[in-house]
Length: 296
Image (cartoon, rainbow, N blue to C red; front, top):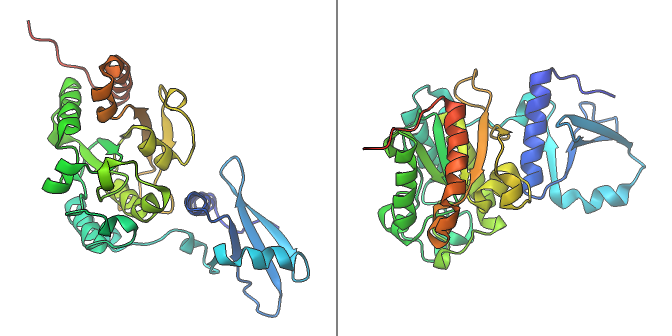
């Protein structure tokens, strides 16, 4: 049995399923259009990214289905519901769209970080039409104090890195995987990243960058939903599209994603700055940028 969806909807459905896989949900069941027909359709994602249905009759493997019930998403008959619609998609101005997302986020209490000492939510900053976007790990003490990502020592280094590329900080968009400071600046945990991820994906869909630079392993692994070392992640581009999110621009079909070291790591090990510069040069080439000539 094949899904009666066109290619675009198949891709959207596959992206939506990948998003739930990242959150630990792997079994999905479609409610039959005819209640008298007791057939359950389980959908999984193939290695090529397509959605593959598997049909089970009402008498087969009931124990397995019951055990998966706690991690089940019921998909309605309309295939378009594979993509979540959000209020910002009713506007075309990215400034207004980002404001809507921020208002939707509210004074977030969706994960434990909200009551572990945060002073304020650190949403994101920069050009809402930027071609280049940087995504870090999470706010530190200075960011938590000022409400803006990358304003401490790491932020100063990131600003210098951006200047070395020949552009100003104001010309890029900067955000983090989580929007609240983890205690002691520790790495955010999975249950803290998961509630924040949909809002970050919505931000990305509004900004529509040509390239995203993931700063550090946490950002890279969360965005790419893969577990690999920095050596394995760096040195190449990945095709990236926010899973399950539709951009306010229907012509935007995703972007490239590159991985480099987090500025905080470069402060601890300055020997790796040369490697980070190689990553940024790769990004510059993709964007058709040229580094400014050194002053003589």
